[in-house]
Length: 314
Image (tube, rainbow, N blue to C red):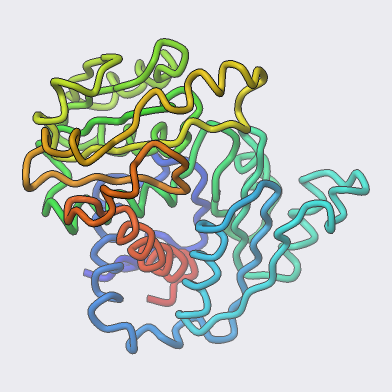
């Protein structure tokens, strides 16, 4: 079935991981797979369309992934990658920036350091807004990428044991993905983090209310790695800390090494939204269970599916 049948996605904003139902996510993932198998069929569907990327916070993967996605669909891109070169540096409000850029582009992808910025942008934008990450709150298109990766490697999004490890307090990719997976059936989450970086209670409460997922918390990787289908590693984010001493103390709290990888099942996978710093040793990269670079590649396909669906061209 076409993801856009009945214009289900046409003109919609993508701000929160829960903006799409499980069935809508499945439709987007089906389209991403269709694009993967026949890219030529979609190479010009966005011809004449323009994507604006507004990044008020550093990004390599998300911005370039979106730009690559639009170009691979035959569309064009305009970008602000350095907020110091935009009118925001002169004091222009976000609402005015969005209304101005919406006059230039058909769709806007925005990253912002403040939580809720994407929601505010959506209130003022006459064209669709895609949240490319806002503060520590949400990163819904990374969730689309992550769901696509899990489904491609595990062939399902239900009945999974998923361990999230590292900075679960500030990790917006974790906050978005765990909610999307909580909407599926019979998933189990193992939250591995130090006390200071635990998943915020409001997020845990939301997860509990979304479905039947089980939640277990621990500070140790040992003893749980053998139980998981997916190990989702995250970086301890220096930019989220007010105290550098705390960052230095926590940054190497978890390091996935080849020895620790031996505890995992042969059909498990290791994911990471990237960039990594020291939480996954380079020796792990060669293991076939380490799929984080494939995950980044699949992100382009997932974003192609999202752009094409929202613009109603596929």
